[in-house]
Image (cartoon, rainbow, N blue to C red; front, side, top):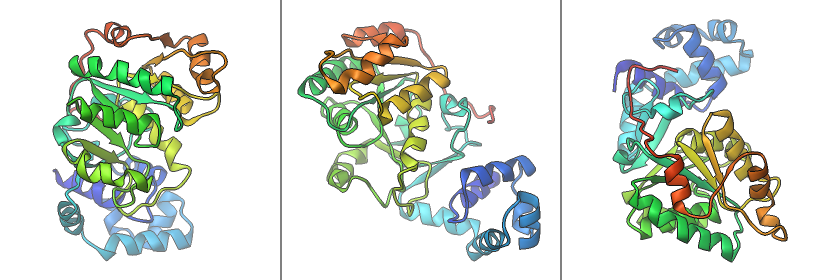
Length: 302
């Protein structure tokens, strides 16, 4: 990791840092050297911070060193991948507001795979929805796709579990830090099964789950992937937010149709009305994404 990447990791790890503030800092000084020399008054004037916030940032910047964070993540077996690094996924780099640092734990090779597909859906799937997952995932894995989801209850966790069961690779995108897994019921799966997979977050390990972090996380799920598959979703749901993010990012959206009497299929049917591709089998996805290639490139910056 370069010195600049270490400084970026240092800044992203601070309790007083936000993505918006970090973006301001980067635009003011891409080398990320000036901020470590500024007084709290200069921090306030340069980045438009209140006196209180500027003092907190000043204190946090000097409380520990950049080397401290390197040791901190090493002990936690977390690998920070910054937007400056060669291993940062190009697809994610292309979105409007990519995370500046991905805090990764697990099998890093999974992040470098060229073929990633998001699968999302309701937290309370029907029997039909679960059978759809069982039908779709094995052929997708055989075709080399890495399954990406949000580690939430319902479709997300079933997608991760089915992938592991069928010998595939999966990425869980967390809406909080690694030390605060949510929901707690999924912790045993994370500790025993996901150790050979990959869990990532844009938040440092100590960050607890907060409501607004979940929709923010959805842009990463879709942004990592060539396409997003929605299994079941009500008319207003987080899964539709992910689908909307995918469309804004110029990615393909696929939806499994459902009966008009099934409220859990209302959102997916609506997506199909709006132009999402109706899928009945894995080949519908594979054929649409045939020839997709994506690799990591260190030369492209946000």
